[in-house]
Amino acid sequence: MPDQSNSSHPCGNCAFYKDSIWQPVSSSCVSVLSRGFSRRDLTAGQPLYYQDDDNRGVFCVSKGLIALRTQHHDGTSTLMRLVYPGEIIGFRSFLESRPHRTEARALVGSRVCTVAQRDARHVVQGNPSVLTRLASRCITEIDRNHERIIAAATTSNKQRLSDILLRLMETHGERTGQFLHMQLPLSRSDLADLIGVQTETVSRLFTRIQADGIFRVSGREIQMLSVPSTKQSTNM
Image 1 (cartoon, rainbow, N blue to C red):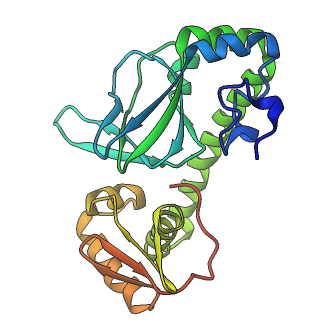
Image 2: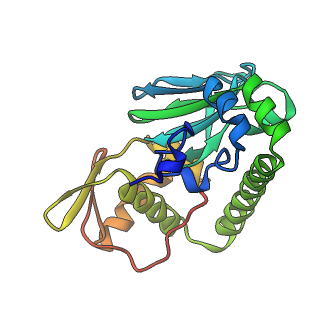
């Protein structure tokens, strides 16, 4: 049960409240935070914002899975990373008062909480601890990119694909008996972007991980037969 003292806080009943950037907001600013707070459900494929859109606030994913993509002038795009529940996005454009440099789109049914830009600025200005948490999220982004570069140089492509599937399975998989299964929300091209390989290489990697006996793959249907012993990657 949530702490009753958090009942007036718009994030007070959220499973991610303890680590929320808005958790340290002073009681005098809770009303401002509540005024700018909204919650939105997205269907699979629905955009949260487009690349080059003006910033409308800070977004927290409370359920589902969001893809951040960079759109190129030739009409193609690159999947930059996946956003899981508990993570925030849009904060860099918020801090720099600039348009978004990526597109954010739901890959599965998702829920996103937003604090509108004007009210978010008011809260940040009156609560230095909130700005500290925002800075911490920026550092986490830098660390994630650093880890991804290291993984590209030191971890096999097969292991990186397995890590992505494991993370997705743990977040979105459904249990049937002793197995977990899911409908993969990513295309082969998306997986290639995350791993840093050609799309055709992903098909060969799927063949190799199935040979290990951990995953079964049929189109986008993925079944996990056992839990891998390797440590899960968190930088995808």
